[in-house]
Length: 236
Image (cartoon, rainbow, N blue to C red; front, side, top):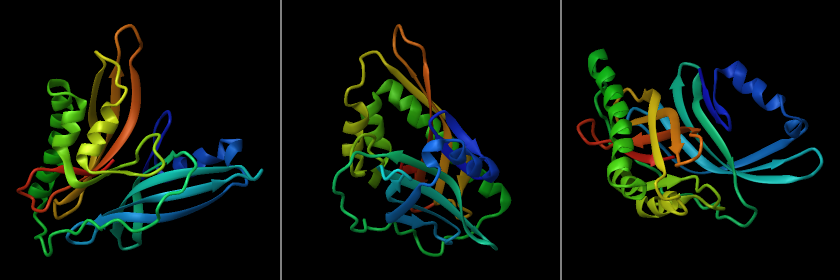
C-alpha cells in the first residue's frame, strides 16, 4: 500500500509504483545511487523517515541529480517504505555530511486502539489547521509557525535541502503571485503507534485570478515529543 508522489498525482500500491518508472523510456537502463543524510524514528522504532541525495544516470550517460524523502514502517518483514518522493535538483556540489538525527522521546507508551485512532485524527486536524493559517496569516508565516526547529524541505529548485522553519517560510513565499490562494488537505495519514511521528498525504490546490486551479500532490512528515504536544512538520 505504498504511496509514491509523482508529477500527475500520487501512485498507490507497490505494483503500480514498480510499473510507473517502466512506462518512461527515460528510465530504461538507468542506474540510481543515493546517500541518506538525515532522518529519525518514532519512540518505539516502528516508524521512521530518511532523506538524502540521489544521482540518476541514464543509459546514454546523461546524469540527473535528485533529492529523495521516504517514510518507513517496520513489521515482521522488516522496514518497508510507506510514502516516497523523488525530486530533481540542479547540478552542483552538495554536502553529504549527516544532519543531526531527529531523536524521539524514549519509551513512550503504546496506547489502546481508541487512543491510536485519536492520534491519527489529531494529525489530520493539524494539517487542516496549517492550511487555514496559510489563508489567514499568509503562506510564509504559516510555514514558520508549524515547522519544527530542525525541519527540512526538499528545496524545490535549490541544490541542497533547506533547513529551519524560517528559511523554509522564505522559500515557499518567494515569487508567490499576489492574490494567489494556496490550500491543501490530507486524504490519508499514517501515524506511529506511539503517536509521535506520522505522515500526511494529500493534494495542494493553487488558485490565481484568471488562471485554472493547479493541483499538486504532497506528503509531509510530522513529529512531536509527546502525544500531548502539538504536531510540527519535520520534513516535507
